[in-house]
Image 1 (cartoon, rainbow, N blue to C red):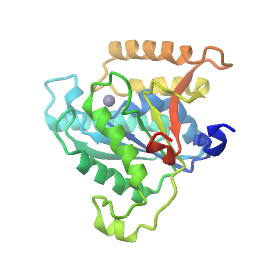
Image 2 (tube, rainbow, N blue to C red; image 1 turned 60 degrees about the horizontal axis):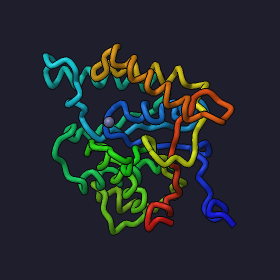
Image 3 (cartoon, protein in one colour; image 1 turned 45 degrees about the horizontal axis):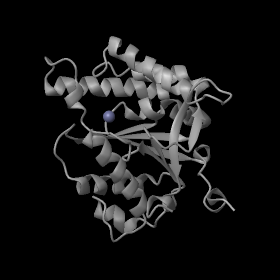
Amino acid sequence: MTFESILPIPDIFSARRVLCIQPHYDDNDIGAGGTLAQLAINGTEVIYLTVTDDLAGVVDASLSREAALQSLARDQQASGKITGVKEQIQLNYPDAGEYSYFSLRRDLLKYIRLLQPDFIFTCDPWLTYEAHRDHIQTGLAAAEAVLFSSLLKIPSSDPTLDAAYKGHSIDGVAFYYTREPNQVIDISSTWETKVAAIRSYATQIPPDSADQLIMALQLKSSQICEGRDFQYGEPFKILHPSALHCGL
Ligand SMILES: [Zn+2]
């Protein structure tokens, strides 16, 4: 008997609605854009939730705060159209700034209870040598929010919603930016879509930096396919919610 026979790796392509929780506005597309574009093509509702306001990474220092926010929003709308994102949610915590982990977890519980997705995508908070606190906090708060979504004694930031919530099942969590993948998704047919989405983030990634990023992604996305019968892949650690506690 194998562990997978007791708790199989959940099938992301069975999802009806996915909530993709990212620290910054480009992480979902960099980490999982090919897979998310394929899900959108298949008819799955793809919803993005961005935790921070992204202001720390704006390249043009002459932009006012308001102009920078508008420019970031334009990038996100453009990339979302390319990937097939149905809805964009912004929490606007300060990028690389000070904010409460528990406040973030309450907000994520709110959107999980409100939208009732059957799959969550987020960054792996246990990535070795990840130094960016926004990534660690976001991945961990998302995982904890999945674990606690049906425990109504753990409040979200919306008490009215909590009172009405009857619980729902979440099939799994797909962590991107992971060192311990248990699945590689074939993104050969959506590779160009992913590249185009990443090029939309020009407020943070000017064209020459985008070229470098895409070259690095191309190398990694093809290396992960060695021994497989496809050209480009995205690695994920995909876990059933029951596997998010005590290492089982
Ligand atoms: Zn990021």
